[in-house]
Image (cartoon, rainbow, N blue to C red):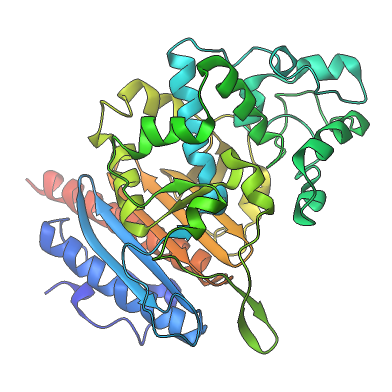
Length: 392
């Protein structure tokens, strides 16, 4: 019997280890069952109102589960079709759509932003011309990290924020250093709309959501609020989790934070990124998205992940981690009462996603522990096979 058939509720989170057998379907089922126990136990322990997760093996859902309430203290349960805000996991869709259009020669990564957005200015006119489209999606504009997110947090309007960029001087030459952005990342939207004659939201719907049958996915606050089966946001206070209103501010930057989806939708997104829908996400597209770009050394200091990360980069709307020697494609998101995380291993063909309707670091702990366990198990299998070959 696999070790994963034992209850893990009595074990520390970091001690989750898979049995050193083979990854047969029964082992995957045991992995899913055990992670479900851990997920539910940790959310209960941390008093998170609700959440959901999915584990996929190539083109199969191994385990999908929901926990808790759509609204704390209310009666409606979260289920696998309950829609959450994805926050910055939205960037994975923007990076994919933009890469599709580059492959279709609608625009090129090395074109200057000002070709499409002449109103964009920096303090240094020369630097203004050096910001290229690829720098937006690759988080390498060189601007101060999270430029003007403070104004966005205060619900400042985008049309008032854009002129403020003329006050900024990049920290480095664009393309040479990492600088995470939400507003500047979303400058890809007017480029996409100019070159296609369609809205960003419609394009994501037509090019990604519809062909992948992501039936509950949408973009924007109006779509989210029109969804009956949606999770309410909760923030953590000294007296526990408190429900808050859905905020419109980050919906202004659709490519950065505008997507809403259920865990069922994310299972389909993961399977497509694992190569199972080549008519939507081609092998060349996936190879491009998964190519490491600018190095993100700050990620190596993430509290829950630093013990496992050997290196980290940003690709095209996705992070690219060296996680204990395994390539992991990853992104997380956090916005006003919601937390999201999605990751997959292209080589192992395993993916996992989580959604919470309460701001909690428990997601990061669960994610890091899950991937550590998967990779440790794979290493044990490889060693066992190698030993067996030498013995023969």
